[in-house]
Image (tube, rainbow, N blue to C red; front, side):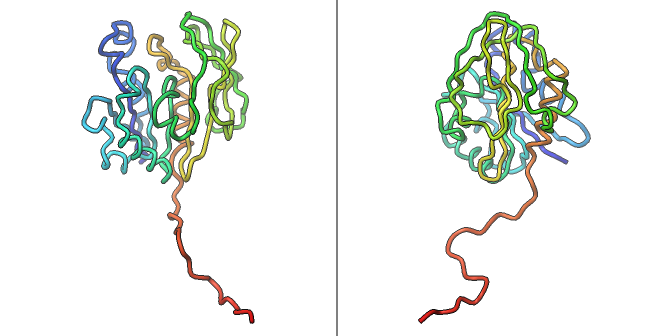
Length: 241
């Protein structure tokens, strides 16, 4: 059984009637609902919970962490970010959604500003699959089309992705690297752009399919932790005169 934790700051849902109407159980609740299965056990955590819902116990039992944030990146405690980063380096998968590009955890793992252009204009987005052989796009056609989304545009200040999975085109003319994978330590990371809170993006079947595929791809690999530090030789070292 794979264990997934969906983290959401859960602020828009409390203050914005449009968001509450689209996601009555929160963005985290919607994602948790479509991810839950006989093979995937899903829990949720939110910003205002104790330790943001990301206690040592929760993190130690999480195989893949999904992160959605926007209004309150600054409220996430640095010590919690450090714990999440440690778990990623140890092998926990991390799926960063939409405005999570500006989260403390993503910026820490990327080592850059992660800044970009943006615009809210109810414009069409077409996410082109640029790596059709990748498991994250299994079952997805040549592109995913969203009738309305927030625009994110280049330049996106991130390191060059290990693999670029999606490239978005927007009605206003911009393009954006919308699906990027990375490896940090023993952990895998996937950044997936769509998901502005005032649009029903996470109810779209292809978006749900990508997230399901990504969770499977991000799950940790069973392996022994390497031993570091001073090491005795495996073979006899011949002492030279």
